[in-house]
Image 1 (cartoon, one colour):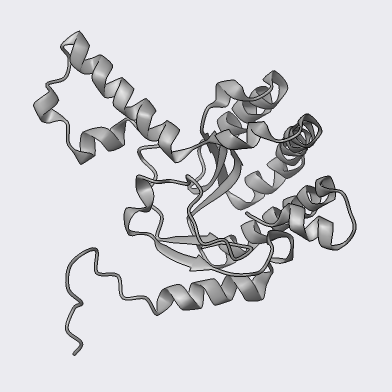
Image 2 (spheres, one colour):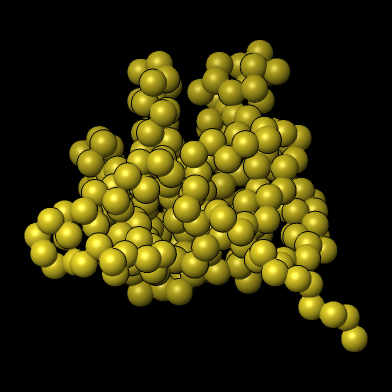
Length: 226
């Protein structure tokens, strides 16, 4: 969800106003996914690197997150959406962790999933999984010869969530920025110059239309057409 700061700066506003506008876009996109029957939506909300930003901006982002959870919980229930968070929850303020735990538990029975990546980094997730496997091997509960892709996947933050089919990157940035590095191996990438606060239904539909034209071979050959 890139471009909040640039959106604000282009309007002569503080960066914090861009983040507020970006939060409104999250609400819209959640509705687009519901209407398109998309079962999993993962949003890269706050990376491990984002802690380096000015304290004022970080504090505002944490405040926005807490407010969003309180305000949107009713929407989650009305639409059967399960909230899940992946990342280093222990890094988050105690009040925010409390809201996350409460809403995650309250929505645990729903099928659709909104996954927020908070204090998340793809490399951090991979290192964590390797450490957990190493600890099992050291304790004698895992034979190193049994470590394969499936065993590694089981040690990721949310191993039951399917790998993403499509990754949408706003604001024209041509990189993954440490997002779902393991899971994104065969994801289709769609980059749009639109800044996240301006990302609307037409942009969403354009991403889906582009995805529908992709030939997903997973390293193999295309199926012959009839």
